Each structure stands twice: as C-alpha cells, then as structure tokens.
Length: 210
Image (cartoon, rainbow, N blue to C red; front, top):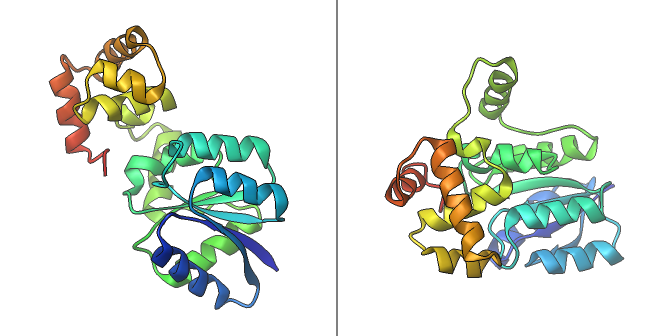
C-alpha cells in the first residue's frame, strides 16, 4: 500500500486528487495539509510514502517548503503538482529534491502512474521535460537565464519583477535593503540586463509570477 499525503490549499483540488488516487486500490490517502507548516506537522505524526505537493501554497515559499521537507523527512518522496509550466519550476523542484513534477493539466492516469513511479524510487517528468533535461546534461541545450539562478536569486528576481521596490522586497524576504540591492546588481549582470525595467519585462515575458 502506498501511503500519500496531499498538500494543497484548495479544498476542491484536494478532493479531486483524493478521488483520483483512491480509485487505485494500492494507494491510500493518509492525510491532507493546506500549508507547509501543516504538512510538516502531519509528517511528524503519520507514516507517509509520497507527498503530493502544490507549488503555490500559502506561507513559506515553495523552495523553502521543499527544502525543509527533504531535510526533516529524507525518505519521503515528493511529487510536485503545479499549474505552472514545467520550464518555470520543474528544474528547480528536481534540484531541490523532488522526485517528480507534474502539471495539473495531465490526466488522472498519468497522476497515478507518477505516484507509483516515485514510490518505487524513480523520477517522474513528462517526455518533453525529460528531453529538455537530457539536452542540458549533454550540453546541447542552453538553459534560460532564470534557470541558472540560485533559489534566493530567483526569489529576488520574481519579487523585483513584480514591480516591488527594494525596501518592499527586503521586508518580504527578511533581508536588508543593501543585500537586496546587491542581489539586483548581480541579477542584472548574470542575466545580461541593464535596468530594473528589464527585469520586469523578463519576468513578465517568461510568466514567472503565475
């Protein structure tokens, strides 16, 4: 029996995932959570094999949720579910320790197959993403500039790209304004951009705020 926990802040989504998963007699939903903190409490008291983790839950940022989950519960497999296109979050999720990444427009059968695969210790990504990752490994494909950023740099990029001022970003990410300014300068250099307006245009063009 594969014991799964569903972490998503939308009741309708959780209900749908529960129904799909439990149609397979070998899968049991043993708990649900609406925030990263709730999920960690659940994992502290309940045996779970696979977590279905939504990218956009309230509370801590996705990368922080994933990192802490993997640190505290390294044997639990994490299958990330997201409405975001793969080129926005899949690579970062896998680098953060996720066992798989599945967009929510996939079929119920694909979800069940993904749960079984990661439960067995495998990795699950779509064929398109697998080809993209293979191209990166072989050196035949150049990663987009935002995919080469550290997790913290990516957070600062998204915050600045939303139009926030340096002080607002500093307050949101619990950093000093000087540190955020340093990140901004580093981002401009790394990404070959010249101004904050360029950052905003880049974030908008790549739909990094969705």
